[in-house]
Amino acid sequence: MASKKVVIALDNSEACKKAVDFAVDHFKEGYTYHLLHVQPRPYDASSRIAQAEATGNGHAVLWDIEKTAVKMTQKIMDDVFVPRAKSSGAEVVVKLVHCSPDCTSSDIGAAICEYVEQTKPAALVLMKENKGAIERIFVGSVTKYCVIHCCSPVIIVPASSAS
Figure 1: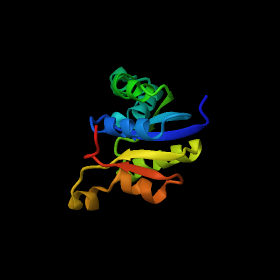
Figure 2: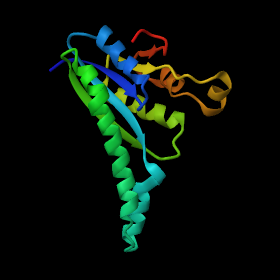
Figure 3: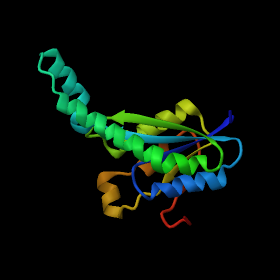
């Protein structure tokens, strides 16, 4: 088992392939890649399911929505990101972390930083978000949050990096 770790924070975007490729190219031998995805819970399904079950009014539809969202993310991880990471022969750990449906970029960033703090990797690799200046001011940025709050070095892969 590899003793060094790299956390690669991913969403389900095509651009995140570049983050995995960057890690494979720059953190070659002896690393375990932790592929991390923060998954917002749709419609806060878990709490509504609990409420519905407590009142004897089970809502299987909400549970199915949440299960489907998690399965879709897991499929993208397994079909797209895991094979890319394993192409180097490295060990790969997939981690899905849940947050509320109304989570902000700060909430997502905090979840990423918490995972980084727990795993103590050599680095956190993120894609640069392609937001304009105004959008960054009002919406925030996961990348910015992680750069400010993360306890490990943060590597930001620009969208224009080589594929």
